[in-house]
Image 1 (cartoon, rainbow, N blue to C red):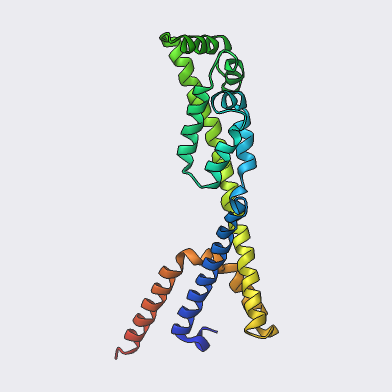
Image 2: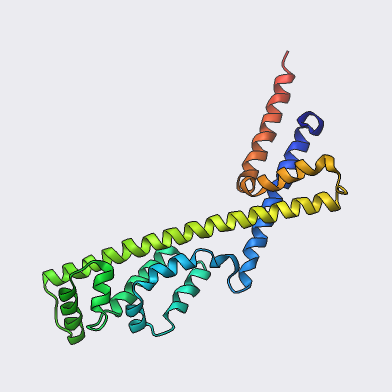
Length: 225
C-alpha cells in the first residue's frame, strides 16, 4: 500500500485523515450552541458535588444558584476559577442557619462553626481555634469540590472524544459512499480512517513532518555510492 502511494501520497493521506479528525472535533464543539451541547457532559456529576453545599449557595446567591455554576461550566471557565468561586460563595453563605449543614458536609465541629458564623455576623474577631475551623472548612471544600470538578471534566473529555470519533466515522463513510461510490474494496480503509482520525489529528503536523524528513533522508542515502 505504501509503495503504491509513495511517500508524498502517504503524507497527503495522513494530512487528510488529520483534517477529518479536526473537522469531527469542530462539529462536536459546534453543538454547544444548542443549550450547551457536549458541554453538558459531566455537569450532572458536578451538580452532585455542589448539592452538598446547597444551603450556603441559596443563602449567598439565591434560589437560582445552580444557574451561576452551570453557566460557568458550559462556558468552559477555568476549573480553578470555578472552584475558588464556589468556595467564596460557601464562605458568604455561612450563617447560623447554614452552619450545621456546612459543618456536616465539611466534617467540621458544628458548634465551633456556628460560633464562627455568629461572630462573622456580629463583626467580631475570630480566635485561633475558630480560624482553624474556617481553614478546615476551606480545605474540605477544595478537596471535595475539586474531586467533583475533576470527575466532571474527565467525563466531559471522554464524551467529547467518543462523539468526535463517531462523527469522524460517519464523515469517513459518507465520503466512501459519495466519492468512492460505495466500493466495498475501500470500505475497511474508510472505516479505519474514521476510527484513527481523531487520535491522529493533534499530532498530524509532527507526523507528516517526520515522514517528509524520513523520505528526504532515504533519498539522500540512496544517492550514496
